[in-house]
Structure formats: structure tokens, C-alpha cells
Image 1 (cartoon, rainbow, N blue to C red):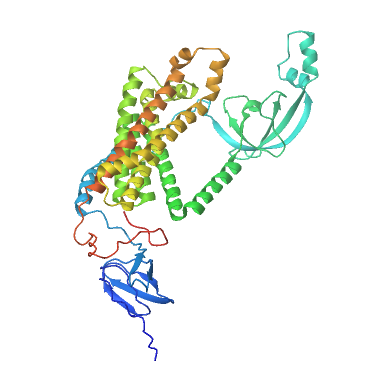
Image 2: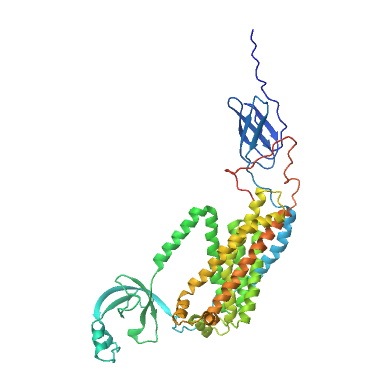
Length: 505
């Protein structure tokens, strides 16, 4: 008689680790611990197993176990995703001891320097300092240039050839209707020469300047095209793209952007016009923008606080270097018609300080990007390998930072070069040497602005990376947040990416 030997089911249970899921055929087991894991077990056929743990934290993952009946052994691995342990209270106190006084100083600075509005002045009618109204081009007709120029007193006295050339040219006579202000509905005409860069078309929305002291028929003139609709549409597309891709983070970024514009328009600009030191105003305003934008976009956490500290140190370096080289290079800041008009209207404004304020504010946006990226890199490296010391974290993260430095510095230089491209073309036309071009104050300002900002960006990478590595490596976790060691003979959990709750940092 043949006896069939049954397989030795169930297998003996391996030691259970707190927080780890365990499966055995179709039986359910309950383990005390910190995580809830749900998995599947397979042995010859197919079965399901459920492991549950209880504790202050929980996560969801997938566990797979395979058993070999021939050898009687087994192996398994667990996918577990849950919130990371928060930074210890000791480190939170250290970070708060640095940032709370800084934030308090920024609030006090805002209160002391708050301007309460820009000071009033008499309009000069020059450049941007003109009264403007909205208007519409109602009619455009072709006319002979010779006849309209002669009637306007612009006839040529150069001889017959010039007069003949003028008579062959066709100009446009545009009728414009004022749409806003006390003269709403009033019309005036304007002659557009064929070689003018801006040609008007019927139905086009334009901006007109108003000069009350001029003769009645010359009080209005077209100064620009009304671009509100395309610019508003483009802004809407930008906001939609940010929200669609960034979701809640995108919404917070847009809110931070709006707050930045409010601080710029209602604090920084009016305070400078009131006569406050532009450098002090820029430092206080930039600090307020930095605190609001970083914490609003990235949350109130130790990681964000480290990025704030790195940005602050870099801004201080930029301010010191900028002040030194603006003074050493005798840069006045009065290099074009706009700064000349500002100096004429408000002689008390320190234009060299205004230049330095522009360097600080212009560098802030790129600094935020660099410091947040480096801090995030250190945190992610630490989560991938918690056993790494601060030196190992620093070396790994600085390799990422070097790539960031190369791209950001190149971007900053090209951005300034693109803004100054017409000026560079003028120097090229004049066939000036590179030394002559660089020595001119107009170009020297851009060189100092670019290089000082770039030095601050380069310095922000090792500074922020070192701060983040020290904070993460020096974190002293309490017993309630420390991970329990695995018993001997138990297989270590293998972390895998998957869906789960975002870990707090």
C-alpha cells in the first residue's frame, strides 16, 4: 500500500519584526509595530496573506513572499511607504533660534520703513512721466507726404530732387478717438510717415499722451500700442500651465508671486522714492519676499528653513561684494534717460544705492531655485541611505550642485547679455575694443551686476549643501521616532518607489 506523504504545511513562522507585514498561506496574522503592510504569499499554488501592525504611524505597501518546498526555505521583501520621522526637537529649536529673530527683524524693518505711498510731484511730460489715456484708431487714409508735410511746416529745403522724392511717398493720416479721461470722445489726427517703425491700423487700440500746456490741436499724440489683451492672455496661459503641472504647489507659487509684486509695488518702490536708503529697503523687502515665497511654496519645515538660511547667507555675500565693487568702480547708477529723470524728480535718491538694490533683488529669484534644489538633494540622499554621514552627503550633493552652477551662471550671463543686446550692437557698430566697451559705465554696471550675482549663486551651492548635510547628519532622534532594529535572521526591508503618502521633512 502506497502512502502519500503530505507536505509539511504550514511552515514554521519566522521571527516577526515590529512593523513588518507577514503572510502565511491564507491565514491572517497581526503584528504589533509602526507600519501596516498588506501583501501576497505564494507557495506551490497561490494564497493571500495579510499582516497588520499597530502603532503611531502607518503606511501602505505591497509584500511578496515566495517559498520553495524543496528546500524548505523562503525569502521575501517588503515595500513600505510612510511619513519620514520628523526632525528632532533639538534641531527645530536650533533653527528657530536663528530664523525667529531674523523674521522679527524683517517685520520691524517693514514697519519702520513702510512709506505709506509714493510722494506726489508735478508731471514733467518727459518720458514715462506723462499723462496718458486710452484711445482707438477710427480711420486711416493714404495721403501724399509732400502735401501733409508742407501743411505741417515740414517742407524740405534741400532742392528739387528731395522735393520730387517727397512727392512720390505715401503717408497715412490716422484719426484717433480718445476713450478715457475728461476728453472722452474727442478726436485728433496724426500723420504716420512710411519709414516709421509703428504703423497704425483702423480699429487698433493705442495709448495717447496728453500735454495740457500745448496748443489744443497738439495736446494729444500717440505714444504706444495698447497690449493689455495679449499680455493678459499670456499671463492667463502661464498661470494655467503652472496650476496644471504644479497643482497645489503651482497655486501656492502663484500666490507667492502675487505677494512679491505687492511688496515691490507697495513697499520697495515707494520707500525708495520717499528717500530711504535703497540698500536697506532692498534687503528688508527681499528678505520678506524670501520668507513668504519659500515657506508658502515649500511648507514650514526644517528643509525649507535650511534653504532660507542658505539664501540669507548668499544675499549677505552679494550685498557686501556689490557695495565694495560699486564704490570701487565709481559707478553712479545714472547711465540712461530713465535714471536721469529719476534724479531730476527726486534728487535725494542715491542712484548708486539703487543700482546695488537692483543687484540684490535680481539675484534673489535665482538664489531661491539653487538653495531649494540643493537642500532637497541632501534630504533625498539621506532618505535613500540614512547611514551616510555629513561628509558623504555633502560630497554626493555637491556633484549635483556643480551641474547646477554651470547651467545657472551661464543662464544669468546670457540673460544680462540679451537685455543689453542693442547696447552691445552700438559698440560693435562703433568698432570699439573690448577694453573700451567694458570700461564704459553703462557696460561696467552690467558686468558688476552679473559677476556679483554669479559669485553669490556659486557660493550658495556649497554653503547650502553643507548646512543641509550638517542638519540631517546631526539630527538626534528620540526613541519615539527612531527605527526599531531588525532581529537577527530577519531579512531587511527593501525600499521601492510606489504610491504612498508624501513624507514630511
